[in-house]
Length: 99
Image (cartoon, rainbow, N blue to C red; front, side, top):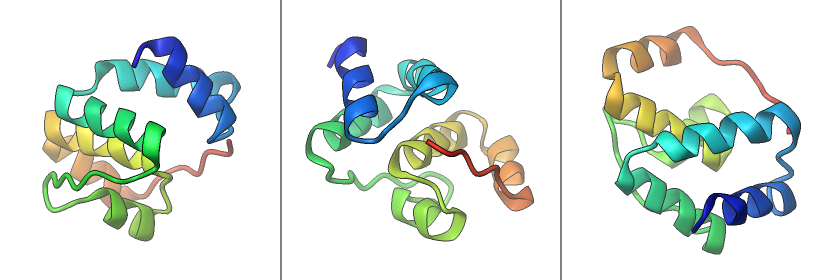
């Protein structure tokens, strides 16, 4: 998928807009290939690809931290790239972002 296709789906299906849309697009672009592919699959089919990083999955992040699937995938990428920092951030809590 190209960035314009991702942007369109985030806006139309998941109601991303403004700064939230901009940040999500930037973060998706920087994700690992495996997570980027999982995000693209989710955007096209709304099926979650099972990926585990540091004991976390998309489902666990959604259930325990109130994240939407896109935020959960981006958090898995954070856990992959900076595990200690990401785990500390998850322990402290998170901000709720309205879409």
